[in-house]
Image 1 (cartoon, protein in one colour):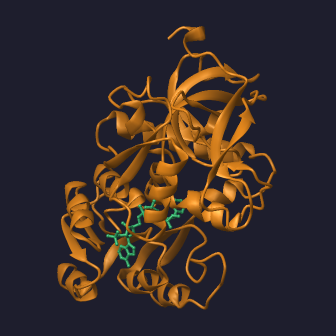
Image 2: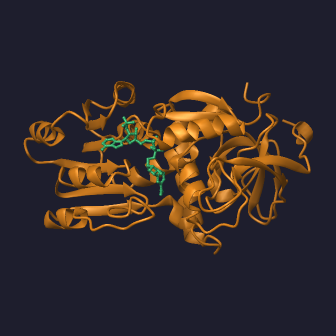
Length: 364
Ligand SMILES: NC(=O)c1ccc[n+]([C@@H]2O[C@H](COP(=O)([O-])OP(=O)(O)OC[C@H]3O[C@@H](n4cnc5c(N)ncnc54)[C@H](OP(=O)(O)O)[C@@H]3O)[C@@H](O)[C@H]2O)c1
């Protein structure tokens, strides 16, 4: 693609929250197109997707940002400008990744694309076999799944990944398989989620609302427990239940702030650390947001970790072993996004990922 294939406008209409806290429903507001600083890329955004993080930030503003704040942390698009010291990408490259959660996100209304300023370490080349719309659904969820499993899952392991119909969960199941898990057990709450967990590669999928999962996993593992649990359900009830399913000396991996802190409004006592400690099992907390929770620039070690993770993640996708399930594709319009976020917040969202088309022309 030539340098002028996508011309940068001066301004665009971002979508996000304009007051804090309680910033839902979202609104649109004018933003100047930003200029990349050293180590940054300006990406013309073609597509994005929805994450629970979007409505949580709008509701709680827990990173302490001053509104207006543009949302949409997943993106796929085209590099249109580079700051100094960017070594890896050229103008016109098709890329995907994650916008740091303490920065403006990728959503823009109007259908002609948005603009995201992203550090080089959170960008990677779009896999050839992926459309922009598919690649735009990978960022937060796939990076989270990758950071959770890449260093914790040993080949041949038996793993339990509850929530296998969710954005993170269905990608985590695919990745676990690619990393050599011998047996993958999952659970979900409705028929479509269970079907997605199964088609993503789980060997056994239970209904967490009805089944005696502890009994079933006991039977499957001859009462040993599983080698690894990756619990991305963000449910304290689930955390307590799944921590009991790890074998002695095994691992329990969680996303975000972790047991006892699933709501950022309150902190409760949680037995999870004690349950794991009693069997000498390891608690691994992968919190992608912690890298962006203040305004201090990322240090070299974190940049290396994140860029390695996103490139490995892209390579796994390129190899064809991981592909996001897009249950809905919606336009980047404030009404459509507000409706989808309300469903997600109420726990009624579609399974897998909801993709957002930001540039109608280039997403085709
Ligand atoms: N801090 C971080 O680094 C970070 C990064 C990414 C995500 N997160 C958080 O991780 C969570 C998951 O993200 P996501 O994008 O995957 O959300 P999602 O698409 O809404 O998926 C959540 C899934 O959890 C399932 N679930 C809920 N309770 C369960 C239980 N007791 N047992 C089994 N499954 C259960 C739901 O299944 P049913 O619909 O079938 O009930 C749903 O499919 C969110 O809260 C998100 O904010 C944190």
